[in-house]
Amino acid sequence: MSSRLTAKKILIITSNTGIERDELLKPLQQLRGDGATVTHASSKGGTTQTFVGDTEKDKAVESDAKLSEVSSADFDALIIPGGTVNADTLRQDAAALKLINEFVKAGKPVAAICHGPWALIDAGVIKGKTLTSYKSVRTDLINAGAADWVDAQVKECKANGWTLITSRTPDDLPAFNDAIAKAVAG
Image (cartoon, rainbow, N blue to C red):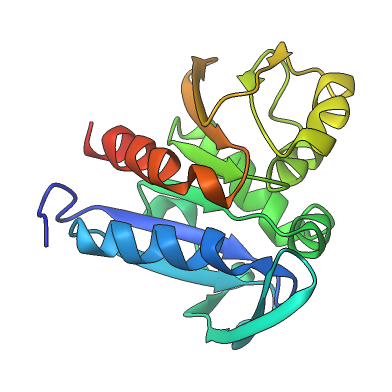
């Protein structure tokens, strides 16, 4: 176990279903392994349902809190996993959008993978950013005002006073997790 993130607190937000399993569990495990305290907050709290490839039901995972019960002031960074149902549900969740905006206004790193950037669109925070995502989200991001979309394992964009870290798919998780750890460690 590493200690590079000791005393750092990271928030992962999800809905209660349709979450891409590895995009929730791998960052949670790696960042905890690096010494961070990681909290998983879901829309309703309690049990969340993960999937593999959006179609294969997988593990049920207990979240630590409800989205409406957490504050950005208590965390150093925010992570938004993908899964099309998860991301589409989060983009309609007022508590999720509020949290995203609080992290951005505080200048704290925000990381989103796969379809997770959909929530960033509805939070209104991607204008002028260069990012990556699952390829089918590209047009949505460009239409919402992203400066550019790149096909890369991980894209870190520092602009407008905050850092956005994005990745495409579960295959990119090692690079995604490492970029998050570096941004949080400072």
